[in-house]
Amino acid sequence: MPITQKELPSLQCSITLLTDFEPASDAMDWDIGTHGLRISFHANGRRYGSTYLPDVAAEQGWTKEETLVSLMRKAGWSGHRADWKKVELKVVRYQGKRASLSYQEWRDWRNWLEATGRDLTSP
Image (cartoon, rainbow, N blue to C red; front, side, top):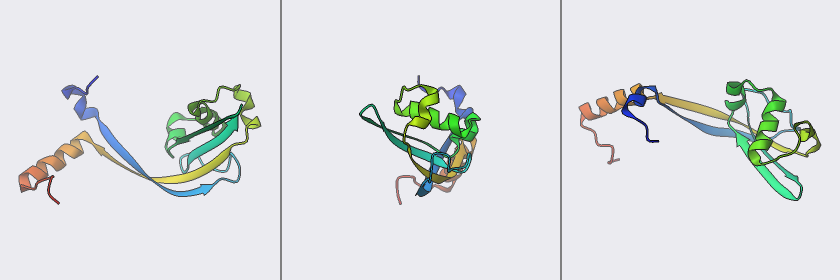
């Protein structure tokens, strides 16, 4: 459904610039709230892969193991939860710089822009 006028004040937009990609020495070589993860693995003759941004595990309140199992599920893996350790995971960890803007902050910026007579379409 389209966003309604009533919902606008509660909206927030965020972007995360991903940085510092590096291979993890093992599946647990990362820190919740600091690192995002990109995993890849093979199981049953199929290749799987998925990623979570650095904030996801902390926002969800997950442990490292819960995060890894969730990432494997996100990739499409349907094995038993307890079997995740039997899968040879390739883990790349990374960090991110996040920026957010609320609707009100955006609205204030737009009002300022309009008051100064600036045009968004010109450089």
